[in-house]
Image (cartoon, rainbow, N blue to C red; front, side):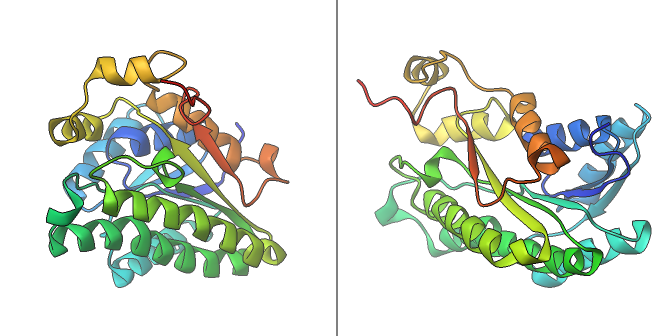
Length: 253
C-alpha cells in the first residue's frame, strides 16, 4: 500500500496508459480522480474500478482550458481535503507532413499536451504548496529526446515537457514538491492503433527496432509512475525515466 490515503489525480485516464496508472495507484491504496473530457467515459472507468473495491471519483475536464483545470483540482480538494499527486497524462497527436499541418491541428496538440500540462502543474502546485508538498509526474515520450517525421507538433510538446519538468523541479524543490517525467516508447494502446493508420509503421517495424523486441505494456509505464509517486522516490526530482525497451540507447541500423 505505497500510496495509502494519498489523493491522486490522473488526467486523461479513461483509457490506455492513464487508465492503467489510475488502477495501479488505486491498488496501492490511493484515492484516485479519473479524468476525461467526457464525463461519460470518466464515469465508466471509475465504475469499473469501484467494482474492484477501489475509491475512485470521476471528474470531467478539458485540460487545454485553464478554468476547466482549476475546476478539476478544486473539486478534488473539496472532496478529499488535499492533493498529494497529479499525473499529467492527457495528450493528443496529429501525424502528417509538417508543411501541410493545419493551424487547427498544431494548436490542438500544443494547447493540450504542453499548455494544458503547464496549467495542471500550476494549479496543482499552488495547492500542494499549501499542503506541505507533493509529487507532479508528467507523461512525456521518447519523441521528447529523439524525433520522427510527421510529428512536428507532438515532438515539440514533448521536448517542451522535458524542459518544463526540469524548470519546475528546481523551482518547486524548496516547497517540497517533486517534479519528474516518464517517457514511454511504443506502448500498445488505442492511441497507437490510431497512430499506425497515419504514421506509416507496423507492429513488426516497432518490434524490429526495439532492442527488447516488443511493444511495452501500460502496466510497465504505470509501475514506473507509481515509483515516482511513492516515498521510495523521495530524493528524485527533475528526472525523466525512459520506459522504452532500449529504444533510445540503440544507435544501429
